[in-house]
Length: 267
Image (cartoon, rainbow, N blue to C red; front, top):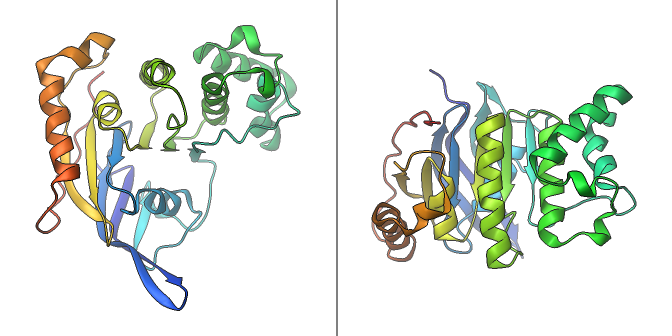
């Protein structure tokens, strides 16, 4: 079966003060439909650049990125993007923020309301549907951003450290809620994080990047079954995976490895 996302020998260079900087070099990666993949690595390893290329916000200098077999040439409704900053419209309520993309797609008022309310419930904000973003906590704002991304029905979610600015307890809660939403709605997810525990807890596979230039250093299968309750974090299996990812991130040497083919997630 063809990959949902296929990154084929992608390189990206930038001109910085007249000098060429290699952000990515020869990155290849296949992600299966409905797979949840996390990406970790040191600062400067090109995680966000890779996501921006998949989102169509940047163009590769060499190689190509494909979604459903078609080359990515720009943004598209098949890819929802969620950043660390919530990017909500401050003058719109939670409901109106979630409805915004649907309105842009020309969805009728009744269907907009039904779909918005479904995803607001999915992220646990039904009591705050008429609230403005300024009255919400950071975690609640990010849940609103996730609901808005889901509402327009993308087949892929690209998430760039969406929980990075949150406190530890809120972050853990949102990780669990994100997995619950993923188990119910099923999307292909590429999730960038600096947090090794978060990477292991969420993913079917963890992609470890190396820096200067950015490239795939290791790909680690996470064999923990879903659903993943909080107790999973205390298991010896989780500890072993966390340690393996940690070593791959912080003790990198040698050349990039050949990337194994993706396995399909187990619900």
